[in-house]
Length: 87
Image 1 (cartoon, one colour):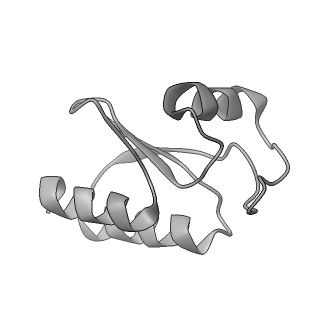
Image 2: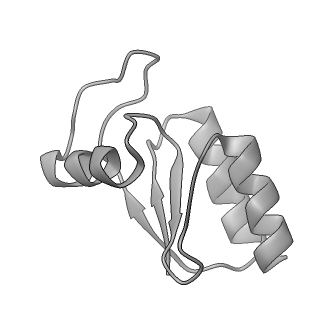
C-alpha cells in the first residue's frame, strides 16, 4: 500500500499526486499539516505524529510504500521512485 503524507496546497505534494494518478496507483492520503518551511499548522495530530515517528522528520511530501518497505521524502525522489517501481 502507498501512503502519502502531504498538503493539498503544497506544489511538491501536487507533483507527487499527479504522478500517482498518471501511473494509476491507488494510495491513501494523510493531511498532517499545512505546508510551510518551518512546518505549518498541524491539522491532524494522529497523522502528524505518524509522519514524524515513521520518517523522523516533519517534512512533506512523504511517501510510505508498505509493500516494498520504503520511505521517501523530497518530491523529485518520490516521483523517480514511483516511475521506476510503478511505471
